Image (cartoon, rainbow, N blue to C red; front, side, top):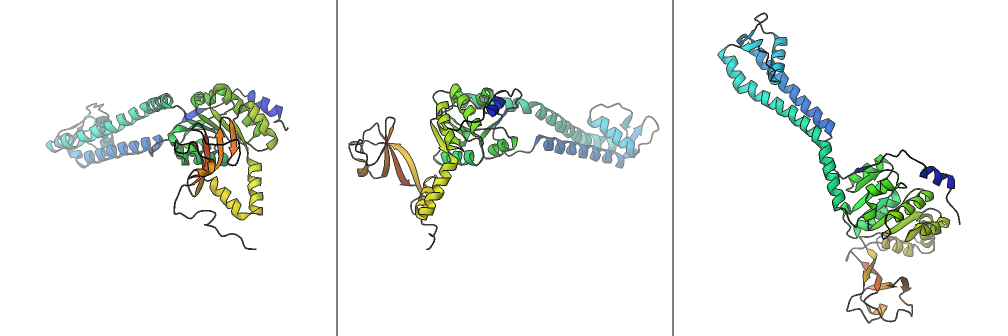
Length: 365
């Protein structure tokens, strides 16, 4: 059996400085910097508008220093007026200027303050709102699914699970790449950025309360460490892991994985099957794509089916799960179906829709 490199495992176990954080799916809102920039621009426009209004009616104002009010004095007056500083060195003296201050300058002053105070409050409360949202998310997260690694394998796995009815809010993605986490949150999943071999990262994903854990890392040695850590934190969760090398599958099972999928071998077997029989290859491809065409599903035995044989049911039964054993449909040990049994059946989920293998023509000899 091929063992993962001990140096690589030790190197990952000795990493002390790890950056990890939780990111929740965000609503479609503007970035804070853009929001602040827009509000500062609005405040600047209000300031310029006020200065121009004062300059147009500069004869109605008096400057204590030289009596005249030029463009610079107009901007100065607008600044101290909108900021409510009010030194009093430039004052409106005519009736028109005073009316303009009442009906125009004062509303602009209020608008200016609203823009600045609103921006300040939003910036100060942004972190508080995010912490509150994060704490609320943690308090309500139960029996969820944790996906370690959001590459091709992890993404395909969680899409398959969600096709059966799993809510995206019940999925947490763990990955060391910030870009990958951003992609996951953009699709509606919660994300935890960090090294999943470390227990504090998995705890941030609430793995101790998870119902199922999918491990789809790029390296087999990383998968071993993640499986060991996850199993230590959660003894009852169902752990499914993927490995590249078939020789490492027993090691994953010894580490606590309930099921181990050898990605390279599985793809190779599908390739070989497609060479021998293109039709059979298309059927298998259809079966592993949940949500359309033919699906392979596991369900309990109904009361109407109890006491019957596997071939007497309406669905096409391929296996019967009895206890910890998986029996083929023609296994004599099955006898009659029991209420405690579970059936693995093939069903059509999209009636009337022609999908693989009929949708694609077979190659001609």
